[in-house]
Image (cartoon, rainbow, N blue to C red; front, side, top):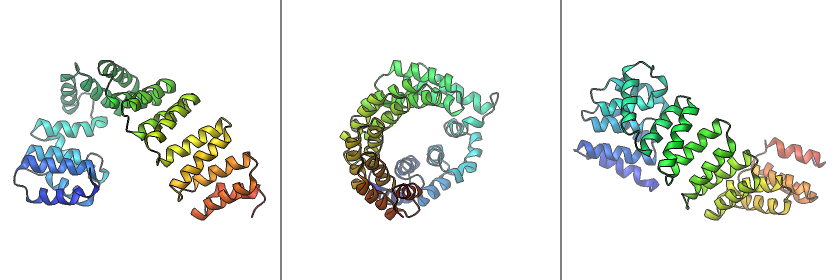
Length: 298
């Protein structure tokens, strides 16, 4: 996972004779930095490789690179099924229901429908196609069969959120966070989902979990501060927002939010100082400028 690994992997890729290893290097680079220009160039070249493992790796590497999307479309007719399936997954939303590509992808997904991972993939595909209710049912089954895979619960939570089932969504995201004890962002996502669902106590618990897991997680401190302010716990809110600003002083929203809390606490001079810090970071921060005007400061 080291950031500097891309360059030596590129060097290995350029000198490797064995196609399977070239494919492996390409996929490793894709996990590190799929948008790196040299990685993109290597993947585009591999789209024309003789070996299907390389073509498959190239398709997967370029799957999220929008400028390369149309280069992948011809591989829907690749002579090797592996490559066709990788391409079909990317173009799933565009495949006609009666097309050979759709049929082949559905048949492939159905092979593992008796396993939680298979149900998960079917659910992902349905969600990508906008069939959210059907996707939620597949993810429900996958989660029942395998309650210990955080990705299943996280995707299920996101789908439920898009269906407007916010309390259930938050519960699934919190379940996913609980299965990743070192992952602070997953706890913050659960906290935000609980807040959106109006479950403020659960939201606070999840956000505190996030900052406990990573005390330097400025965004979680910021959201915790906003949540505490919403509950009129202004002293705690100010402390959380000060922590966020201390960790990342170049984001103007942090001192601005602190300023609004300080105003509510009646600490006018401290509020002015906080708003001015926000403007020092971003002179165009309109909310801070408006707050100062409301406080009678030009």
